[in-house]
Amino acid sequence: MNRLTGKVALVTGASKGIGTGIAKGLAAEGASVIVNYVSNKTDADRVVSAITGAGGRAVAIQGNVSKPADVKRLFTEAKAVYGVVDVLVNNAGVYSFGPLASITEEEYHRQFDTNVLGVFLTIQEFDKQVSAGGGSIINITTAGTSLSSPMTALYTATKSAVTATTRILAKELAPKNIRVNAIAPGGVETEGLQALGAAGSGMKDYIVSQTPLGRMGQPDDIAPIAVFLASEDAKWVTGEVVFASGGMR
Image (tube, rainbow, N blue to C red; front, top):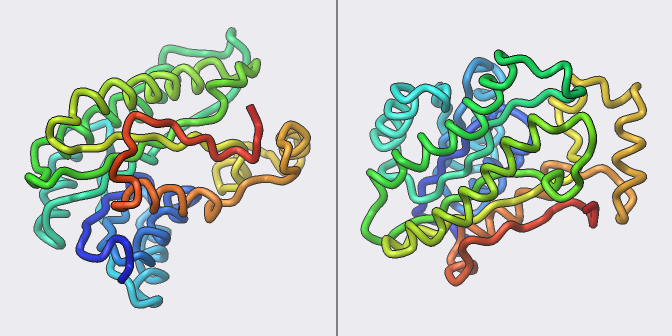
């Protein structure tokens, strides 16, 4: 039997990149998957089609995780379609890189609202509706929290907050049998990275040079770890941050 048969999984920001890989991985193990997206319905529908075409169960639901009303609606609609959410993957995130002088109040709020507030809002809603049997929360942070790379202060600050939140809420929610873990990817080849101009800027070469395994990560390098953390195989694992970075630290 597949490890997640009978489970309902909500993956935020699942219309592309790591989120897509995780959504497909969870579905392949039997989970009914909510493919959350904020604006790109076409890409979200494409992910759903790929999952259902492979015999899985998935539906796309729009929602901005930084908006309380959207998050409440997201869980309400998910429950109406598949039932109570058992697995929450907080993957939605935004980023930009640059020197200290380039950080604006607007960009600060854009990143913290999605990357940090969004995590709090979705976990609060998950906590309200979770079944008596508990569940699994998987937050996506970054290996950058241990690198302290110049030009990444704002984004890394948001993910450092997610890392701390993971460890604290693992203790706080444990009495309800809710496990809270995080995955810290290194450089992963996604649409977002390409949009930053990684292909022609030397960024990709730099990332590979800093990665002992000698290549960029792929979304399907991250998905199996999410499947493990979501499953009963990880029933004794909580409060952990799993680095999936090819050795980059």
